[in-house]
Image 1 (tube, rainbow, N blue to C red):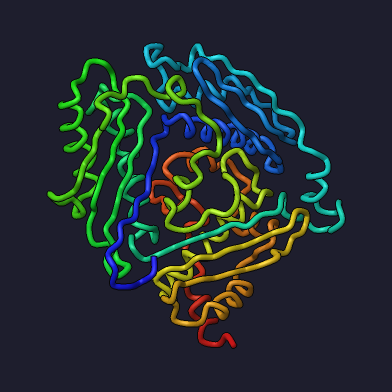
Image 2: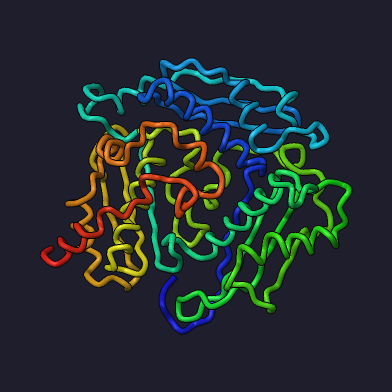
Length: 392
């Protein structure tokens, strides 16, 4: 957000792990993780569809792993909390259909070293990916998405620890922040949708969510003038896939920056790391976060773009929205000197060929402090500062 004296409102949303689309993301990544445990060179693009009584797994994979797909699906659903028949969607009796097929040889020759037109490992697809960081929060993430994720994580927490035992797995949050001069000043509006049982009254649920979820998460950002909407239709008993079918990759803005920065490529979940939709988006966040952490900018957007089968990116772009201490084109040159940008180099630098992805499939891939993710490191700050003094 550009720094000016105007007052603006900006809104981001998050969803709980029991949201239908997030169920599918978690299943796709749980399957990819299981393949990686057995074969780190697994190539995959795993999609999932969930509706009443059914989970359909499709897409493509090339792996030496044997995966019991129905078992992984059921384990994931149970972990999320779909463990009672009265929810209308239960891990023990849901139907599971798999239509996974082998990866196209036309794609695989572009990512296998020594094959295809270019002999080094190329990008698994064409595309443009964005990474972003800003100094609004300690996570170097925009405040609206940070608070939105905090609310949905808290909804899951008070459900699982039985503080609010009537809650069910589905849910959403939305946070609107008032900005003045490009800086967050106050929380304007909170929207919560909380999946619940028949037994609880709307009045009790609203008071409980206010006291047990909203106030603890907002902390210093809570104020008496916030507009709060909790289950604003008055009822949310039917939830999960029976209420709204789920699909892998339908919550890409929730996964990234809440709309505060662009999202260029496709989704992350279910995709192997040779697909730059995933690995280059992680690399771009790693770059942007290190630039902001180094003190050279208050905000930083990084774009990387690739051609399928080609290793070197076709473009590298940096925009600090006028907050940079050196010119953006100089930062671009620093990026190209310090950070590995070819897919094989990104995978090696960030150690991506390991089963770490199911945990990213709910509550965002960036700004996480509850789990350790390699693209969240700020280990390049000193190198960036040093080069910034000498770059032409």
